[in-house]
Image (cartoon, rainbow, N blue to C red):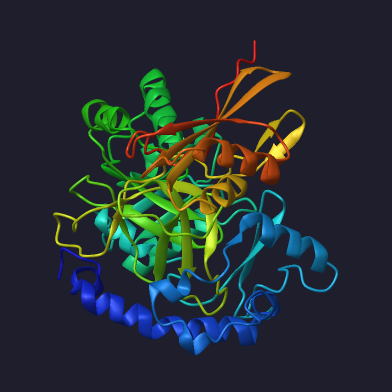
Length: 416
């Protein structure tokens, strides 16, 4: 099994799905019993009945803003807003802060953030010395990947961010063979090393996150610096969720999480291949997030990874799902567009396009319809006014016409 971090990566997909569905009702019940937040959010849910993806999809989505608001409301009594099942002490070695601020606890289990599998797929092995240039300040980024490196058996130099000259000196002296950090900072290190005549040729492999890694930049690292660079997807709330393999065909979902892709502004799963918001349920008992909306867009790829890893794959980060837009002084949300579409069985997909110049907004709902009975556009127009309190035009379109980019609201206004 030297090609994989563990046998779980290559197990039969039906075995993985059965294991997830077996663990799911117990995790929902655990969240209800041990966290005040999900005790309230899931108060009317029979946890033992949540044994399928369809049943899971009926549960509410908790988004980052919901987490922030609960934390603010409970700050005097519980800084985590009732989402953590941990108590302070040895089982909570660290507490982190993300913008908001949102506070996240860290549990004490080895490889708590589930990062080792991603590092292993990127070629990290026991005995490697890793230059970790993720931030060690307040946020968990550096600790997410450091815990994975330790689980593999790597040594870690905690470089953090900034102080480029000192980092170049440390690389030249210590000769680490692996890098962790953002791709943009790695490029800065390579370019500054050239200018300064610093030797950083020991760096041969890298795992990046926090930013997109376009193929052009990956090729640049390979050609200009001799580095084999991979990418991964992680969040401060959920840990490491997906990682790239040698196949370079999307990101393989990590074990230990159940991932859905839903239509932005809703909790409704979309078909395979359609772009939507990543919603994640973790099986982390310390911080049990159930249907947590990441706010990030992606899409599922069909088929398994050519490396033999059998979990599903996503395309990677494709933008943000929160497309709330102010139109004629009123905020319009993706959920409102979904509400309009749900009123008409003929509607397959809808996209609200806002055009014109600022202070002269034109709102058009582009609608893919399976059929267009007479008066459908007028009835949809009435629904627009009812839901948004604004008037808008309706344009009926053939199925498959709208772009597959996850956009529910497109702001095409001129801001000149």
